[in-house]
Amino acid sequence: DAKTTQPPSMDCAEGRAANLPCNHSTISGNEYVYWYRQIHSQGPQYIIHGLKNNETNEMASLIITEDRKSSTLILPHATLRDTAVYYCIVPPQGGSEKLVFGKGTKLTVNP
Amino acid sequence: NAGVTQTPKFRILKIGQSMTLQCTQDMNHNYMYWYRQDPGMGLKLIYYSVGAGITDKGEVPNGYNVSRSTTEDFPLRLELAAPSQTSVYFCASSFGGAGHEQYFGPGTRLTVT
Image: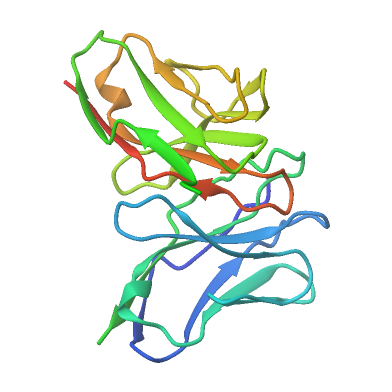
């Protein structure tokens, strides 16, 4: 299984970009990188995922390095509602996509 | 679409009691999952299913059972509840495996005393 490493916490000013890093140096060629977040005690919320190319959706952008050993989630204009725990996940190959949640990064957006 | 719904929202059990946590999705997803989250920790996979009639164990299956008789429902059964099963339980579903996101329910907060 590809394991991920994230900083335990980060702060960001409201309105600024939040850049959340993730290392996944043992990732295999066909394994996706997923990002989820969990606001307080709610169920996790899917944000974005990618394989090799950079991806963007209405919530965020995902930048994956060329060697795929690390990635960065970018929230372009962070708001107070983006305060949450952000999880970077690389599920093992095999089709069932069993997510393995670590402790993630606690992002605090400050006014 | 209601998405993924879970009942009950909260429950207190005495040691040794049994109960079933209900999970239903209306998105016609083939894959369904049960996770538990202990305080301050990430989620851990209990069981998952890739279609009606097919289930498999996750990381922490002991003390739990599941069944999948329909596409929509994926109940989680706790037999002989123990204090170690005090946790928040989340159900999730997805259309497929690799490359498909999972949609999570709101969770069931269970306390065993």
